[in-house]
Length: 214
Image 1 (tube, rainbow, N blue to C red):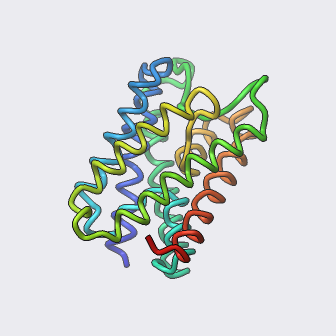
Image 2: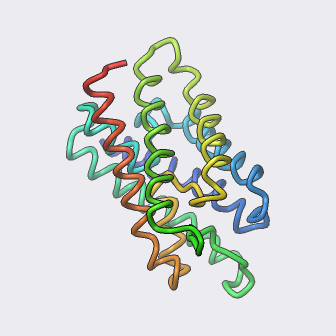
């Protein structure tokens, strides 16, 4: 269990460090670049750590696994704690390596009018559902397991390209929470949306997968 938690901690750190780091250090206005960075970040983490913990690196994925009876409650809580700490450490390093007043952004998610809370909730729920359901189905097929890093990485790139202009395409509560904790202000007041919607999407994916068993 300790090895699994360390893997989830470090894997989430990699995902946030590479993905959010691409925004922090200059790609904030380049959606394709950010999407590719997140895809590469998750691919690196899966390639290096997937055999240890199952490569969740996302509380929504872990919740989907729990709902589909592929993770115990103890593992779920441990995974989420490890993932959260890994994400926070990544953002902390951003802050330690560059003065806060020099940042245009910390990679936090947020939205402004005419985008509404309802639009963000719907988009984040649907995007996360697609991601988690894809992971749940493909990870059960032995022939596809060697390609999970590519499958998840490419899926994440595509979903971010679709959802980025509307919701910011978080699809991961830790990816949003970690920057918001340091950015504060509007990001922190809106972060509940980016916590709730992905978790609902992950839970729904787990529930449907449990009964469909694709």
